Amino acid sequence: MPQVAANRQRVLIMAQAQGFGRRYIKAFFKGFFVAVPVTVTFLDRVACVARVEGASMQPSLNPGGRQESDVVLLNHWSIRNYDVQRGDIVSLV
Image 1 (tube, rainbow, N blue to C red):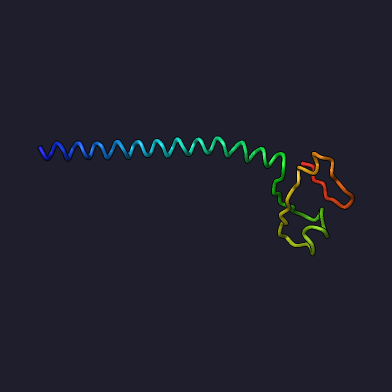
Image 2: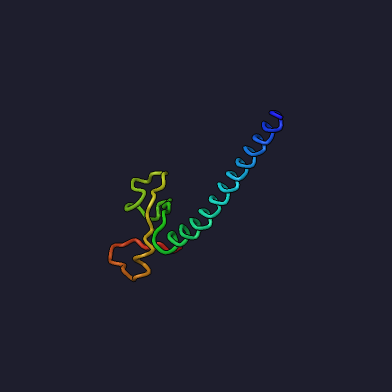
């Protein structure tokens, strides 16, 4: 009889572990399907990060002819609201 009780307890523990794994995977996919559209919308509508390479923007960016690239924040929000002023750098992608 003690063997049967031990087997039942092992089966119960395995079932609980499978339930935990399913809950974890379900929560991960829920978060994933919420985070991806929010992130894509933010990067498309508000701002994103881009690299500037080459000599086309010297001396403002990549001064001194360095071979490294500079990282800039592209502000999409200002462009959508037509808030461009003299001296601003505009990127066409």
